[in-house]
Image 1 (spheres, rainbow, N blue to C red):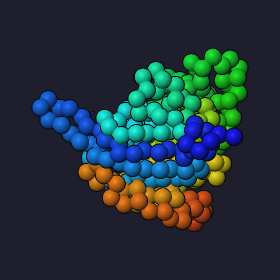
Image 2 (image 1 turned 45 degrees about the vertical axis):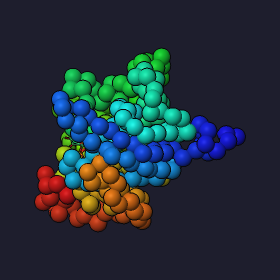
Image 3 (image 1 turned 180 degrees about the vertical axis):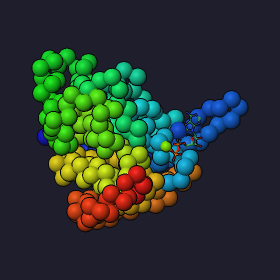
Image 4 (image 1 turned 90 degrees about the vertical axis):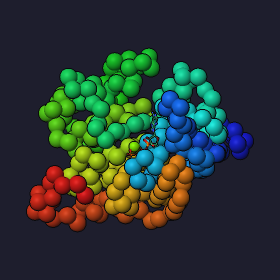
Length: 261
Ligand SMILES: Nc1ncnc2c1ncn2[C@@H]1O[C@H](COP(=O)(O)OP(=O)(O)OP(=O)(O)O)[C@@H](O)[C@H]1O
Ligand SMILES: [Mg+2]
């Protein structure tokens, strides 16, 4: 048993208080986040919305331990991560968070399987075990038989699924995705969202940044930022991406290919 407020399952997964992030640009200060409070429980899905420049990526970077706040406290799994050293932060990131990016960020001269193995490389795991785990992760995203393909031998949706498998392979409890459907047609977007919803059903916490209201509809909570502050925070019953997928007739799917949802 872990006492409340201590590291472990009793504490909220994410607890941010008064988070500020100020960038210094010559003589100017850019206040990208101006006092953000956020509590997030395990197994939820959150969409972060807001206009360009409102602070979404800045917030995601801090939540994902890629960057640190200028001011405020950030407890991740009950542990204060706001003032850690770079290497401590990298360690927390490796254990706690898997990332999915809009542009997939796959290594082009490397197979799907090797791309997925990448996060395990520096963890002292044998190559046989790395292969095994990467295969399991590719199976979870429906890519059996594509292990040896290079990214340019895969469709956009398949590349994004490789990126999701890579985010899953370390078994981190949090998956963060910045515009994960930004480069995909509508049918493929639904497929990616169905995979992300499946992860939430398995107890993962999914945090995504999106400009698109119909993608945010798949999350159970929507947070809206404006000028570095949360101006709206609402719970909702998520739309089922699997149901949305089933409702698209194949002809319509073909007609909408290449068009953002
Ligand atoms: N490294 C940086 N140095 C200086 N200013 C920055 C830096 N990164 C972001 N900013 C500024 O901070 C503010 C918030 O930027 P951020 O990237 O978080 O916005 P965003 O909501 O993700 O926008 P978009 O939807 O366009 O991706 C913007 O005014 C931006 O110009
Ligand atoms: Mg951004």
